[in-house]
Amino acid sequence: MAVEAIQLNKHESKRMSYIQSGLIGAAGGYALKQFLPVTRVEKQVKKDEFFSEFKNNVKRAKTKQIEAIRNSAEKTVAQDSFIKMIDGAKTKSDKLKFLKSLDASVAKEVKNIISIVNNGAKEVKLFNEKILTGVVKQIRPTKTFVATGASFTLATAFVYNILRKISEERSKEQD
Image (cartoon, rainbow, N blue to C red; front, side, top):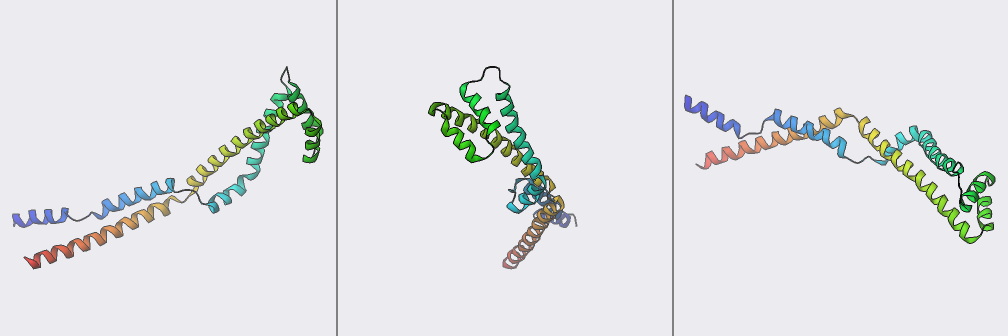
C-alpha cells in the first residue's frame, strides 16, 4: 500500500494544478489590463467628458506664457510686436496682415515667439493625453480581465491534463 501512495503522489505532481493555473491566469489578466494599449473608442468616450477641461488647460498654458512676455521688464522689439499683435488682431487674417507689415527680421522673431507659445501648449496637451490614457486604464473593468485570464489558463490546464493522461495511458498500453 505504501508504494501505491508514493506512486499516486508522483503521478499527481506531473499534472498541472488548477488552482495554480487559475491564479497565474488571474495575475496575467490583471497585468494585461495595464499593458494593453488604450483603443480609440475608449479614449474618445473619456475625451468627450474631459474635453472642456483639456481645452481650458491649454488656454491657461498659452495665457501664462503670454502674460510672462507681457509682464517682462525689458521687452525686445519682437516681444513688443507680439503683444501688440495679440491685443490688436482678432482674426487670423488680421494677424497675418500685422506680420506682413513688420520688418522681416522682427517678423521672424515674432514667429519664433508664436512657435514657442504653441509648443508650450502642445506639451500641456500631450501631458493631458497621458493622464487620459492612465485614467482610461484604471477605469477598465478589472473583473473582466482577471476572469478572462483565469478562464484561459484553466482551460489550458484542463486540456494539458487530459492530453497528459491520454499519453500516460498509451505508454502503459505499449509496455
